[in-house]
Image (tube, rainbow, N blue to C red):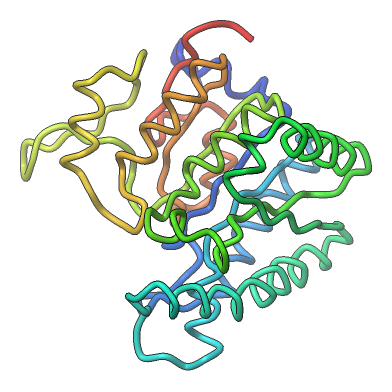
Length: 265
């Protein structure tokens, strides 16, 4: 396979942040789907076997709580969302641990809030802990502390969290998995997938704003990409349901939308 020029940087990525959206690991009733988790764990372990470092930023705690409590639908009011997250967070990490255990892979849970990135001391501690886990060969599984962070639950903004993690860990690549193929332009039959974004402009943000879908929406993903590419890190938004999606992204296939770094690291 001849790689497109803009995709040649992807196989070289060693430290990769994988943001897993709610839709990628839940069913149509917004409940956690363990088989989907297992599929992504298998893909990530194949990357680990090739010497890649993996950091996971995972949504899904609320969905796990919805399933455990046997709720008919995802709650809408804030106290119920927080309560569902409190129930589901332990279940989510248990499911990840179960599948990673099959590969004798250790994982660690990190629950963060916005203050972990704005307070210098806490930000330093976050980076030191993350670096130590990676040095030990442990895969960090990061999530917003949804049971206390009101703003993040309302916005579904684990996309922004993944951007902070990518920058703070000095990652080589951020992959955002969602329920869409990437960023589209146009509507209906004229809708076309944008394969490459050289720079996140106001027009790109406007396109993303019109393409709202899912809990976080495309705009939060594009704004996350803007932050990360400014730090010299490429970003790929792709459909988490695709077979071998992570392997194909790393191989440089024209899958999803790639956002090119604005500068070299």
